[in-house]
Length: 357
Image: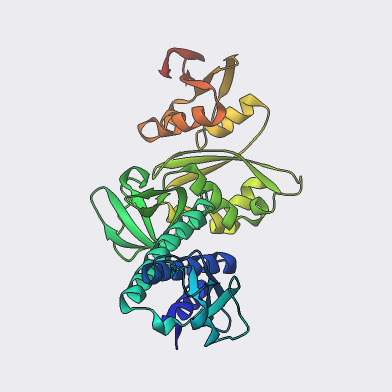
């Protein structure tokens, strides 16, 4: 008897999904109890013994031996005269234990068991996916684009699990196509319509943080610390870093020889410009570095939240950046409201009106 292939199914499922053996046994017992209930009307006086390694299932039923002349409850009791044909040593009041052979189950009971097993496996697989990816939130994942929809992109990872990249988490003007392999960061996992949905992002600052960890060993090893990251996805990002080892140049380590480390990240993020800024407690110097690639003439700190920055006329556009991107990121990075003023070299003074206020 092949035990209806129940144990074989469980062995295969366990190997693929790495299910806990104890939980697997409980699940199989529940399936068998359902089959018993359907066949005998009760499963309370049945014991199930499993040997999953050998593929054995034993089912034992216990009934009380009663006098031949009283009314019987066939589920829990058996007449003495019937017992004595099997075991003459038993008497009234003893427990009679007999084995239930799986082949004696009705065809309908077998179908119910198989259906229940299938349902339980699907539910367990969904829950396993949910639990696995909840533990992987904030992790970078590599996946292939399989569908491009109006409001979302569907991807498959190497485990063939479906990932969802919403429109709001996509980099603008990043023209992706079916079959592209991209990296994104897992930001949420939830059940929607009884299906585990893994939501990923390409705009989250954590993606850039994780990509830097992957490309720069000094960051992964903790020798270089990322103090802050600000992004306008697809346009520009600024990364503030500091080194815990005076022998390590944090900017050089992040950029790599001839840009070898940073170029891969830039390409992954659709040519998003990335400025690596060395962190310092000197706020004037920090603001100056944050406005890179512009060259600053001088900085005036007004209060703990505001700074006036003076630049030559040919540096104004660089300081502000395309559509004001550079100045916005510098403000976010430093926490200071930065006002840009044009330094009037011709009159040896500063123009009265700020360019960015």
